[in-house]
Length: 154
Image (cartoon, rainbow, N blue to C red; front, side, top):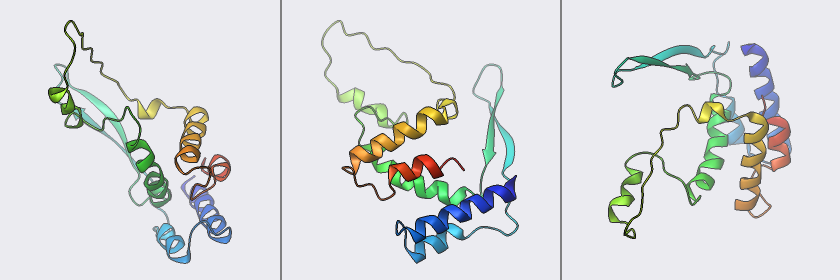
């Protein structure tokens, strides 16, 4: 499966280059992967701060066929995510609340989201990301959203 994925990624990079969405240097960077490609590794991280220690599954994609193309897409989407009105990256980012003046009788509510990213369905996540990309780049994204919809389900 890793060889098949590597071939799909290579074809994707070549298509991006041929259609003029990336230049030669970007294509070379995106193509820098091990030969043969490395199989992503599964491991767990134990949450030792919990009363009953539990493990969170993690798949390390370092040096895998999709590592660089994933980084490329992330680079395109990060500025869009950061401009969203409701974007908190971590607890430090939440510290704005200390300086916020709230009306009397305001009730603050907090929730703990578990595995949000891993539970986003591709059928919903890709169109949503493409729509945000089109809006953010004013209908002229660096990579056409139609292309992302068709090709980025490697």
